[in-house]
Image (cartoon, rainbow, N blue to C red; front, side, top):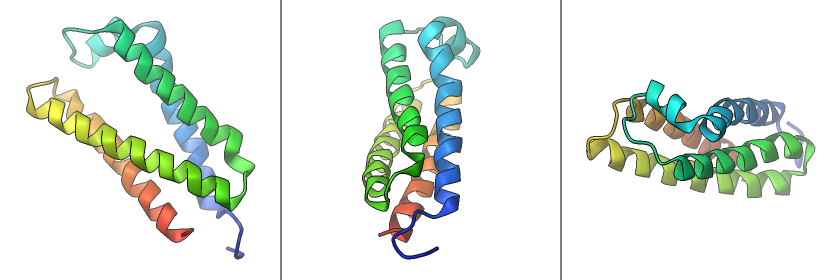
Length: 126
């Protein structure tokens, strides 16, 4: 990596993140009860599910749109991704411990994994 340049690996992870976010956002937005029912939810609030979908669309799409941005822009985006994934992980753990569907632990793993990834890259491009 040349000083001041965004590492190619980080750019690839931003594209992966875009795809992952959209894969979950589309069914959450258009068919929340059906999708979450497949994952073990027995009670679904469509408004909350669509709000989460909107966050996924916004953050994921910015990952793709900002793929060729400056290093400073990547720092800001990583800060947002770290805050989002850390707070989402904490909320999911809390909900799982309160007796939520077992699939919550899968989401804990996904959000926790992305959080570790974003922290790694944020430290690397300090």
